[in-house]
Image 1: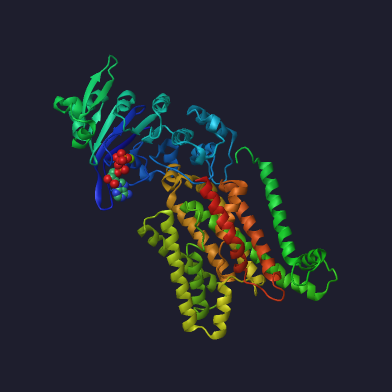
Image 2: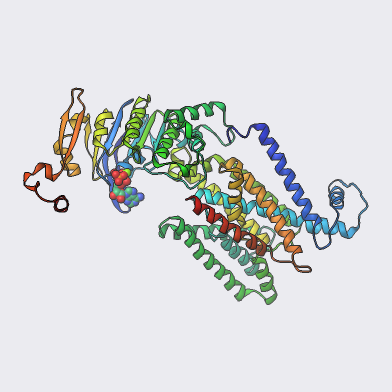
Length: 272
Length: 342
Ligand SMILES: Nc1ncnc2c1ncn2[C@@H]1O[C@H](COP(=O)(O)OP(=O)(O)OP(=O)(O)O)[C@@H](O)[C@H]1O
Ligand SMILES: [Mg+2]
């Protein structure tokens, strides 16, 4: 089960949004994609999911261009959780997760007890079984996000693509969700904003900047003070703990320059 | 759906639905300016279908068979077709206000049908529905382009629909004024309001298959429609080929709308309100929602037709008037409820 992008470019609205991105996702790894807003993370993920077609280059799933595989075949191998997907329908939590079985059900094939079992397990997995009967519009943003993950798990994919999965989650649920995703026996590609989470959970990290892939490698090689300053425009202090995990501390102007210490906070923010 | 409806339950529900539909048709045939006993209705049907040979007043038999029953059957097909089109469009476009009338599809179909009827590109049983179908498709295309230009959102689609309806209604008026005789014009104006007078069995032989084919195609796509709950990209990532589903469902909605418009004119509010009523009753899963909407639409139209014939003694109201009188307040109610929930 391999997924790779081979020199993919994509443009929309007359501008080039992805410029010749190549990367190969390794089986079983947790690959993080980081980068500032608008750097092309979501665009790259939807190309990897086969939802959009590259203008040039190709996305290969098991060696075949993903556009040549049927949508249903793709959906059985790969599940995609969008950055934001909402509904105004009066759908229950459980029904939202049941949608994950769609790639396995034809127009005439009946829903089976096996499908029920898979849906139950997925709900259990994201700790949402107790809210299964609740209506979607009554759920919090974090609960909805966990249901999206459960829906993706019910798809029984081997590759999970997650676009900012920890959006809306409190810190406890952020960690437990990433932990949960990591524990699945799945290949995971996730766009993440929190660099510390990326460092903690990812085997490798891809860094996007202005539609290009500017770095790809293990967290400790990718997350350097120089690169973070270059890509995100912030100054950081990076320490490695005994387990080899990077810890990133963000520095404000004030903590760097002693001359600013006496200025009122509001002014220093404005001056920054 | 998974747990509540076993296959036995589903068969039972299907029979119950059929029974309700038959009862409604029966009522449609019995009730009218002259009330005819229910037994006479049953005997007429038996006479006509199985040559049962019950001795009946030829007038009663004629009224029931040639007039009321054909009318009720067309009304039922029309209600089912419009409700299905509305339900499908609402789910596909993820827009609670979508329906063939509001999106200008009915107006386009009217223009198409009128062009055929008046400008006369070979009038015949099938050319009018074909003209209506072309008109419906052109209208939907135009409205889609407008909506995309206006920014895609819920409001954009509706505004584009309003603009499209106005345009096509104006076109229809233009054609009627320019080319129709005074008598033709009066007939067409009455028909445009939605009208079942003059409907006979040949119309039913067009309306019934159109509704049944529509129901079958929609049901075939029930799971695909479920997958659109979170939008078309989510549907794509669930393995649905979005473009094919769009083409099939928009096509079949336009077909149903066109056939019904060419028979009874454009009727508002049925496609808009009935799907919401069905959602409240049976939930949002399309495997159950679509048949429920079709049934409720069919029964609603039969009842609306009965009302249109009996409300003012000696007069027949256009059925579109009844559906609007009932539909508009119902719609206001639904809007209020959605707001309370949001
Ligand atoms: N359909 C589109 N039409 C025009 N521009 C688009 C389209 N989709 C994305 N873009 C632009 O492409 C750029 C990259 O967008 P993308 O959503 O991939 O960024 P991102 O890295 O996911 O950002 P974020 O962190 O905010 O989610 C942005 O500048 C965006 O405005
Ligand atoms: Mg994004």
